Image (cartoon, rainbow, N blue to C red; front, side, top):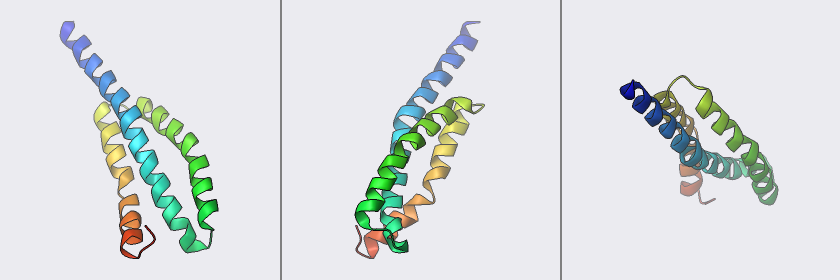
Length: 100
């Protein structure tokens, strides 16, 4: 009985850390990537930053909800890692081409 309770406690603690810290990091990365990518398609820089900042609040809430909706804490961490993959090339391309 104690082992089950300890495992459940660590799973919940891991989800909380993933939701708060991982969700914040993912939201920041997505906001950065979109604010750098939107000027490439014709959106002004100020409008891109404003739009992505406004969208970051519901995105962060959705990531927190998804962290507690998945079946296991490992899937939460894997989902956060996979979600960062499309953002990294955008940020690197902006850094290489001088927009960052």
